[in-house]
Structure formats: structure tokens, C-alpha cells
Image: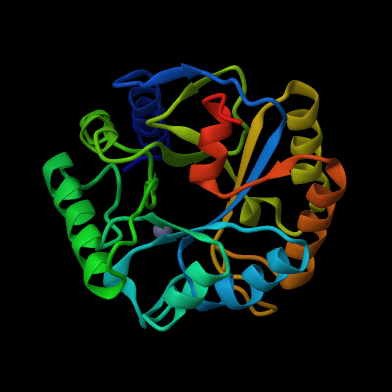
Length: 252
Ligand SMILES: [Zn+2]
């Protein structure tokens, strides 16, 4: 595929994802919010990243693909079943990332939904009574009909977009900022935190592994800690996804 053609296709996909099958609400959070999320999720996201959050009295959301458990993937060694009870006991939230880590654009919407259901059943077997209240779309932006199908199942669904949410929110396509794209430069995300504060928005931060020898999809513990410290000093409310969503809906 030529670069120009790939760019045109990419732009079409992102536009279709953004404008179709929206579930819009006006944001009513009484104060600015920051949420930390981890996709896939590698063991180091909980054992290193989760510990940094806990040191600052914060909890995050871990988007799990149960079909990846115990595997070494491009984002590192993925969590094991033993990690789930401690994640829950520490007050973190679980989120759905499909069972098979389906590419959100390349996978047919019906197959994507089957993988969401398979992930739900797999979690029910491992941790009876624990649910995934929100979803994050793996790899690419979702097809419009995938947005439509998952809307019935989740309070909200997270994507990327390298921005924060303000005023009007599409619950089927919540924006997030991936830390690995900052290449170790704290000022980019710090600027976004400050803008979120000024505009009373909701910034969802995302990444994968947290390790000194991190993959291209993760970051170092020192960088992550610097980001967490900036957020802690900012005065933003820090909540995992489902609890943040309650605030965005105007809950007290
Ligand atoms: Zn992923």
C-alpha cells in the first residue's frame, strides 16, 4: 500500500469512528479528573505502575485480554490469574480489552462482540461476581458498528487520540493520551494535565508496561512516577474509569 493511500484510509477510519454511532453526554463533573489506565495488561503495569499509584493514594484501571494471560507479547509478559485478586483488593478496576486482543478495525463487529463476551465469561470463571464496567479498544480505532454493539455492554469505551475530554463526551469513544508517544518527555502530558485543569475536563492517561527495559509501548518507572507526581500536585481528582464516569455524569 502506498503511503498516501494508507494515510487516506487511516483518515477515513478515524473520521468514521468519530462521527458514527455516538452516545453523547454533556460532561457534568464538579472538578477536573485524571484517570490512569493500562492496556493488555503486562505484569509490570500492576506490580510496578500500580505500586507507584498506591504510593500516591491512587487507583487505576487495567484493561485485560484474558486470552493473553501468561504470554509474552509485544507489550511484555502479561498478567497471570494470581494477579487478579490483589488488583481488586488494592482498589484498582478491571476493564475489558476483548478476549483475543482483537484489532478494533480489522475485526468484524460480530466477531469483536463474541470476543467481548468470551472475555466476560472467562473473568466470571476466574473471579465470580467481578465485572468489566468499561472497555478499551485494542490496537486501532473501532468500526462504527463495533461502537454500536459494545455500547449496550459498557458504561463507556476508551480509545486514544492523544487528547483529553471536555464539555461533550461520546461514551462510545472516550479520548486518551498514550504516554509512550511522549518518548520520556514529561512536559507534553504535564501540559495536557494543566489544560484539563483549566477547562474542567477529564484526562485519561494510557500506557502498557512500566519497566526500565520497557517495550516501545511502555515507559520507565521514573517517567511514570514523574507524571503521577505532576498529577498529584495538580489538584485533579484521580479516579479509575467507572468511578470517573460517575463524576462525569454529575454524580456526587
Ligand atoms: Zn492492547
